[in-house]
Image (cartoon, rainbow, N blue to C red; front, side, top):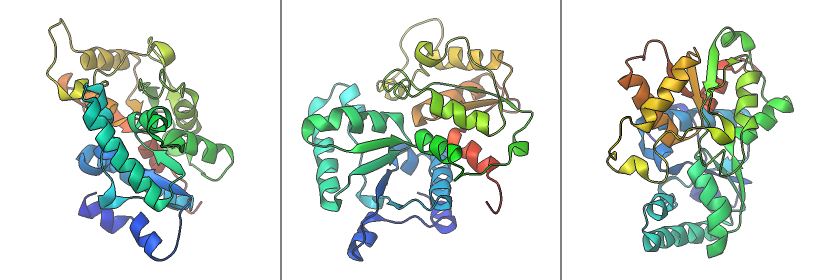
Length: 269
């Protein structure tokens, strides 16, 4: 994380807690984008703010966190994936990690469905599910007037939706904040990929009439929404680029679900 984030938010680190004999209930897995991409650092900051607000017993690995290996596997480098995964699993063993909260659907998917093949068995929670539960049980209180009158659409990340059937949690959160929701024609299990999944974000575009992220951005624009809600770092990168490409930065924002919750958070609650 940047020095700005470190100074403004106190985030517990697993090694420091272990040194004092403490074992947090959850590991907050930040992920590569959340740690090194400046735009997604803001999402990490927003979600850490909410974890602290909810008094969740958690910690991060900090400098001990490495890549899950998911991009390597998607790109076809199975050996590198398994090397990375085994490093992560050994680190988890050292800290007796049992529950993981992720802000990246790709990390969520690989922990939940692919690490068990290598001996890594964990309870994995996507942050939109945690936030939805906190809103339902009243632990998170929001001021709907802060976002009232704004229309938003939600872009379904492939690895959250089609791969893990999580469609309702992010929508429930956004609706609870007071946003007026407008669905794109292709949504939920029929949603159009942002164009960055399956390691596509790390390679040159293939030949074709139009890039996927541009088509998806156009679909979002057609809803009349002023906010595209997202919950994946790849999607955020691609949609933000799409908004810039269409020169709509003054009319349309791509905001993560966690950022939206922080914007609407009720003071003193």
